[in-house]
Image (cartoon, rainbow, N blue to C red):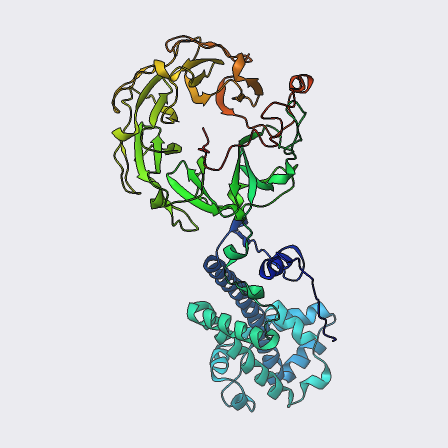
Length: 579
């Protein structure tokens, strides 16, 4: 084998370590082989860890060895039975020959052999060569079976000599020892385990050799992966159904206002981009689930895919527990930022505020983000700062607005305090954080109900009270409207995606929804088929092609947004949550 040396000339500002790392990542210089530990357990496929795999393999080997031993025992018993009949025939060969000669057919000879009782007396000349247990059983006289009689009939004349008894008795002893060993194995599980160990050692000695591949977490001289990842801004997109990807910022080329834009992704049927924001590759992504747990991934861990790719399921990146689904997503740049808190809200109206740095170190399998009571689930998590305000909306059409300072800061596993007093089986469906300094008249709250009606209302119409109260009427939940499905802070430029129970999706502009008072019934947002109902709504980020209307009304070049290629992409510091 000839050695090969590769020399790569780098630019002056290039980092050699980063280039080597990228060679390992994007070429076959280093290959990563993924393993999916799926095995059939009781005829059902299961994904298991190493310990479970070994345990089930041992149980499988127990079953195989037990079945094999039973098979060998049955064969040995059959052979011993035949050998006993042959020994009887050789010890009484004169009588056997006489019976056969007196018969006219083969069947008659076998029948006569079966009707005669064979026995071996203690003073027989072959008695010393016969095992004692067999000799003792033969004293009473033994009737031959069909198999034994047919085996005697197949004997050749040369096999009737005296030396044949030595071969038969020797084989009979060997078979008897095998029978005894098989019976001991079947009666003692420890012997079965010893066989498994012996078989494993035999395989190791026969096939074992030095490992040809190297398993090394620091392969290629990589010491700290983070230091070798170039810090750059990327566009992170998360779809409504939980598909995530990152794309270089320069993928979204600059266009003048009024252009058609570029297609953001080939979304799966019934899916759409719900969150889109710019983040640095070294930023942190926090994924909060309905079970009150939080998982962390660095932005550079999110797969970098093409602009038109649909993305990869978040479930493939995180080790979710059974029944978990994403409730909120946050992008965090600095956990040590002063006066940064996370505000939690649950279905049962509980709220909790915890300092952001309490979530700085998260295990790969996640940690408890909030202590939930039985039959409660987490619905939303938002970043908040002092002087912010919190707005909670319930399924029954009530809402409460209070200062974030009403909720004292608590530890990470704490359960929180009452945010709103619920009546009956009412539940909270939305939490909104109103930034400090927001204009009460221009900041709009959009509310939608399950029968397809909704309204826009200024935040100022929700009077500011203390937390824990019943709140005020948000929208009339009459038979016409139905229950509330969600609330959002919106601006006239926003667009909404409305999702129905039967899978119908409709995209609409917020500007087309009439502004009404807080206690109004609202206007129709979507025409529903009989038996269908609205189940969710979400703000849609603009990554798909712009509307034809926009392309037909270009704006002058003097427009300050005309040279902004990513005008619709918020910064990573914005609050990114799944409403």
